[in-house]
Image (cartoon, protein in one colour):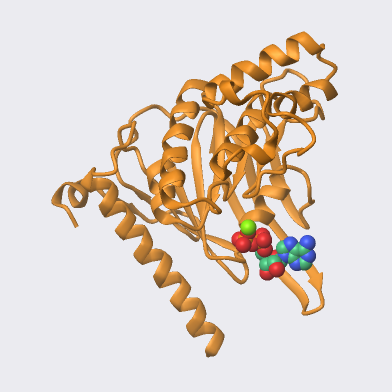
Length: 291
Ligand code: ADP
Ligand code: MG
C-alpha cells in the first residue's frame, strides 16, 4: 500500500457493530442528513421458505452526497433501494426522508430509481421519453419539451432528441434514463447497477459523465454496484454489505479530489483495500455456510 495512504488512513472502530474507515479527513463540512435509515429489516417468503434480505440496517445519507452501496449478489442492495423508493415496505425500522419542501408530500418522482436496463418506452421518441413524467405532473407541452431538451443537453444527447429508443446504443439508453430521472428534480436519485450491462469502456465514460452531472446538479445519489472499482471512482462514501442476511459490514469515507483520475495511486490502494475486505467477508460467509 502506498505510504501516503497508510499515513492518512485512519481506522476507527465505530460504536455500532460495523467499522468506519476514513481515508482522509473530510474535504468539506458534512451537509445536513437527507435520508435516515434506522434499524431496517426486510424478509421475503418464497418457495425456499423465509429469506431475511436485510437485517438491522442503519445508514445516514447526507444532502448532496454520492454514496455507493457495494456487496455480493443477493445481499439485499436492490431491496434496500426499493424500500427507500417506497416500492416495498420494511418489516421493521424506519426510513425518513428530509424533504426540501416545507410540507411532506407524496409527490411522484420524489425518489427515483434508474435501473440496470433502462425501462424506456419504445413507441416514444427520446425527447418524449424524457418529458413523459412531466406530463403526469401537469406541465404544459412547450415547457416540458424545453425542460426535456435542457436535460438531454446535460447528458449530451440533444442531437438524438427525435430518435426512437431502438436507434440508440446501450450507453445512450442509460443516458436517456438518467435525463428522464433528473428532469423530475428528485430529492434522491437511486441507481441500481445502471452501467452493469455495458462494456467496460462505455461504463467508465458514463461514470465520468455521471460524476460531472452530479457536480453540476448537486443531487443526492445512492448508487448500487458490485464493482468495487466503480464505487471507488464515484463515491464520497462506499458502504460494504455482506449477505445472508444483508448487513452493513463496513463504511469507507473517500474524500479524494475530483474529478478523479484513474491513475491516482490512492484510488488504486483504496480499490485494493476494499476488494480485500469484500473477499474476506464473502469467504467468511462461505465458511459459515459449509460449517
Ligand atoms: P441484490 O440486489 O443485492 O442482488 P436483492 O435485494 O435483489 O439482492 O435480493 C436479496 C434477497 O432477497 C435474495 O435472496 C432474493 O432472492 C430475495 N428477494 C428479493 N426480492 C424478493 C421478492 N420479491 N420475493 C422473494 N424473495 C426476494
Ligand atoms: Mg440487485
